Amino acid sequence: MKKVSKHISYKEATHSNYAKENGISNKPKAEHIKNMELLAEKVFEPLREWVGHPIKVNSMFRSEELNTALRGSHNSSHLKGQAVDITSLGGKTNLEMFYYIVENLDFDQLIWEYGEQPKWLHVSYKSEKENRNQILKVLRGSKYIILDKNKICKNC
Image 1 (tube, rainbow, N blue to C red):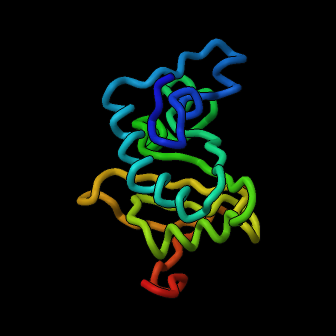
Image 2: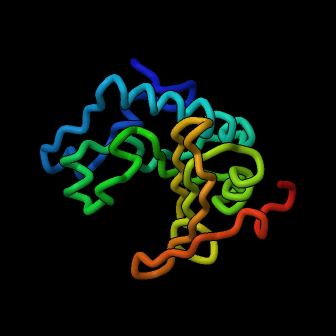
């Protein structure tokens, strides 16, 4: 079976219950697969190694039709295979993963999704030259705040 990386299968990277239930195709093009492989190499795999246990991939690639059906942003990085939504499956918490990413990895956007502890994390990666290292925290009602990396990063 095809793999995006050591710990992410192609099936996992493209899986969507909603797409399956509603007959929506969610097949990436070659350029999307390359983006997913880069994201996995630069962010997911180093994080997975540090965590030391499986991390759930909630969503990675989304076709335009699927993204529209889910009311995703029209410029979502998921459309290009440049974003992944993840949740800890034990050991390290989503909060610990959040701080690890902030302090140790390059990324385009890192989003703390809801709550005092993040329910899940959204992280995107474009390229070393394009990454903004932008950190956001989503609040209720889809409002968000931009977090200052220098105020939350202990070792940056």
